[in-house]
Image (cartoon, rainbow, N blue to C red; front, top):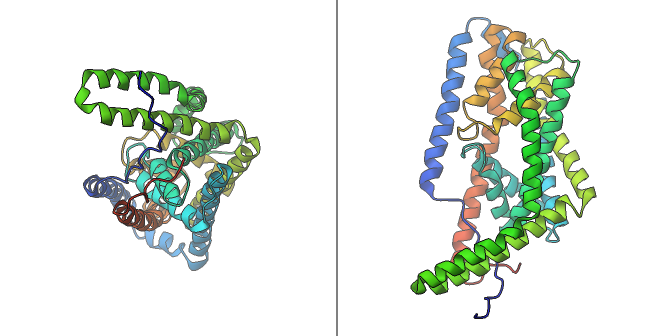
Length: 364
């Protein structure tokens, strides 16, 4: 047998072509705006002006401060992940990474593309891409664990939680299977290098089958092996070898969700929301946990409808459409706008690097 090619870092993927980006952006915004327009049309009357007057400067200022706090905590989380993996990045890179991730997550079904986009920006800042993807994936596992814990608190809480019974029933029935699946995914990610052998043998068989493509397939063999081994090592570094980092990331996620969830009571109570801030805050954990099962881009449309169902029994009817529109305008659209700029900046940098040999590949 010939000598096996040396390990190489896989090429970093781009954020995708412009076609799917514009298509998904149009779909996401259309679904969101259609649901919001329907809610406003169904609930609007003269008393809706009173709900609008509740959005005074103090309430909006507090909501914007909570939003900024959530962005800061998420940025700190990305910065900590890179540092724990031995390749620190600057705060500006970490901020661009989380915002680009939020933008792409809002455009992909099940919000599934945000992690890859965040990893790409971190890789551009100096973190090798396999480690960046490992770090983002591992922190995503921690985020889901925090959402599961918050959902358990919501389901067991003595607080008078809002929402229609079907939402609570779905969260209750899905909690245990979701927790088991998450544990299985975490265990599989930490042993991802076990796939290196089967993948290597498959590509070796393809080399013999198609001699003309042997050189390209040999390169793929080296890259895939390096990618799987490096990614598994990165996941183990965060989830297994650094328990202090796991605890710190979990605390940051609790703070992040607490900040973003506090936007709802901050704007809802001045509109007449008859719930304690703690109740509406805790009730959003199952809502965001179930958002990952929504097939629309970024759960657009579904999140607006679910939040309306959550607050409708506890808010004047004339305020429901105004509240959900204000909530979505604060929690989604600013992140999408900033994230779009971060994504465009990343694509430009990658385009410039692509014209200069060696700029796209940092040592693993």
